[in-house]
Length: 82
Image (cartoon, rainbow, N blue to C red; front, side, top):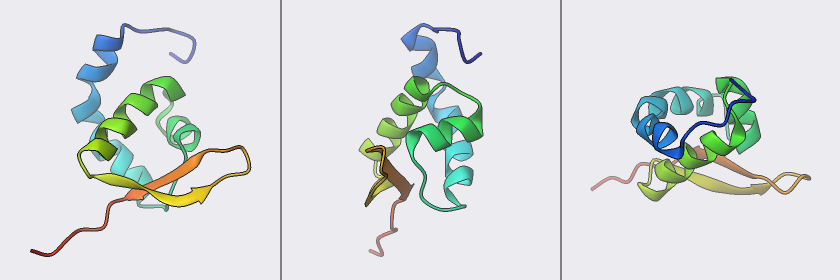
Protein backbone atom coordinates (compact mmCIF):
# COMPACT_ATOMS: atom_id res chain seq x y z
CA UNK A 1 0.00 0.00 0.00
CA UNK A 2 2.93 2.37 0.60
CA UNK A 3 3.62 2.94 -3.11
CA UNK A 4 0.00 3.29 -4.20
CA UNK A 5 -1.37 6.80 -4.69
CA UNK A 6 -5.04 6.81 -3.78
CA UNK A 7 -7.69 9.31 -4.75
CA UNK A 8 -7.78 12.02 -2.10
CA UNK A 9 -11.51 11.47 -1.62
CA UNK A 10 -10.81 7.90 -0.49
CA UNK A 11 -8.23 9.14 2.01
CA UNK A 12 -10.56 11.79 3.43
CA UNK A 13 -13.43 9.29 3.74
CA UNK A 14 -11.24 7.21 6.08
CA UNK A 15 -10.58 10.11 8.44
CA UNK A 16 -13.21 9.20 11.03
CA UNK A 17 -12.11 5.56 10.97
CA UNK A 18 -8.52 6.53 11.67
CA UNK A 19 -9.16 8.79 14.69
CA UNK A 20 -9.17 5.95 17.23
CA UNK A 21 -6.09 4.32 15.69
CA UNK A 22 -4.17 7.59 15.80
CA UNK A 23 -5.27 8.35 19.36
CA UNK A 24 -4.09 4.87 20.42
CA UNK A 25 -0.67 5.58 18.91
CA UNK A 26 -0.49 8.94 20.70
CA UNK A 27 -1.09 7.23 24.05
CA UNK A 28 2.58 6.19 23.83
CA UNK A 29 3.54 9.86 23.73
CA UNK A 30 3.77 12.67 21.19
CA UNK A 31 4.60 11.52 17.67
CA UNK A 32 5.52 13.08 14.33
CA UNK A 33 3.58 12.49 11.11
CA UNK A 34 6.22 10.00 9.85
CA UNK A 35 6.15 8.14 13.19
CA UNK A 36 2.36 7.90 13.12
CA UNK A 37 2.47 6.79 9.48
CA UNK A 38 4.98 4.07 10.34
CA UNK A 39 2.85 2.79 13.21
CA UNK A 40 -0.23 2.73 10.97
CA UNK A 41 1.59 1.31 7.97
CA UNK A 42 0.18 4.13 5.84
CA UNK A 43 1.86 6.80 3.70
CA UNK A 44 2.78 10.07 5.42
CA UNK A 45 0.78 12.15 2.94
CA UNK A 46 -2.43 10.28 3.93
CA UNK A 47 -1.68 10.57 7.64
CA UNK A 48 -1.14 14.32 7.17
CA UNK A 49 -4.79 14.73 6.11
CA UNK A 50 -6.09 12.79 9.10
CA UNK A 51 -3.84 14.51 11.64
CA UNK A 52 -4.64 17.99 10.30
CA UNK A 53 -8.36 17.19 10.48
CA UNK A 54 -7.98 16.04 14.07
CA UNK A 55 -5.98 19.18 14.84
CA UNK A 56 -8.63 21.39 13.27
CA UNK A 57 -11.29 19.89 15.52
CA UNK A 58 -9.19 20.13 18.67
CA UNK A 59 -8.57 16.41 19.18
CA UNK A 60 -4.79 16.74 18.97
CA UNK A 61 -2.30 19.57 19.17
CA UNK A 62 1.34 20.34 18.54
CA UNK A 63 3.49 19.88 21.59
CA UNK A 64 5.86 22.66 20.58
CA UNK A 65 8.64 20.12 20.12
CA UNK A 66 10.32 20.08 16.73
CA UNK A 67 12.59 17.22 15.74
CA UNK A 68 16.02 17.70 14.21
CA UNK A 69 14.38 16.86 10.86
CA UNK A 70 11.91 19.73 11.32
CA UNK A 71 8.79 17.70 12.15
CA UNK A 72 6.35 18.79 14.84
CA UNK A 73 5.21 16.27 17.41
CA UNK A 74 1.50 15.88 18.02
CA UNK A 75 -0.23 14.68 21.15
CA UNK A 76 -3.76 14.38 22.46
CA UNK A 77 -5.26 17.78 23.21
CA UNK A 78 -5.70 18.74 26.83
CA UNK A 79 -9.31 18.38 27.87
CA UNK A 80 -10.96 21.52 29.14
CA UNK A 81 -13.29 21.38 32.12
CA UNK A 82 -16.45 23.41 31.66
